[in-house]
Image (cartoon, rainbow, N blue to C red):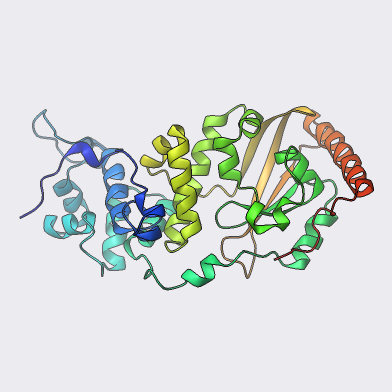
Length: 334
């Protein structure tokens, strides 16, 4: 007999006990468990109405927002029993064909479709965990490359959105108030998601903070599905959920999106307003590592602002060198 369906699972409170509790990162509501699969499917059903997908809605009273399970099952061409088991996390050998059919019925985009597959097939808890616990490293050639980009803000981030390396202009653009050598120390590495939600100066950097916050949460959702055994990622999600009500509210909606390029508007404390293009370039041979690059339109006020910021960053680096600070982008002490 199918379990009764209620509205409580749609956009409900986030469960992150698995991030730090006995269940580890694959515990209830953790980074990538089957419970997350059910919540993800419910949020996607909730955003579709019968008329959106060509179904006739009989009656006016519906106990849940959006499509019912039986309606989704009909659209996907599977039995209601099978779909219910999938949403309740009881189908661990679901086929690609069924997942593709469900994705089409829910009108998932490419990122959501990939996320669905990751959630439906979480890796075994023990597999890959040792590798996930090791500090991430940046190849020397990558450090050399971003160091040569004197006029381009460049930041290398890991799979948890922590800063693995940056050049002086990248540091000055995103976190000039932090120690520039912090990425060289694994225990002290800044995390762009943590800074956005918990650091007031980083929050003030984004005049459209809500847009940036949603993008960060959507990225972390994807990362959690890709790396279900990453305990540090689960702990980050748990920390942000407990310390930021805004993060918890966004997380409960299961946004999923991988933003690889676009425009960012910044309100920089040194050079004022900046409108910059950005590219997030995946790095080979390093799962989840990306190089974030920022640029301004030629002749724009943002280009002038970046030149001014570059001069300021160079002067600050010179002063640190005189004072005996370690050079930015130096050897990693791990």
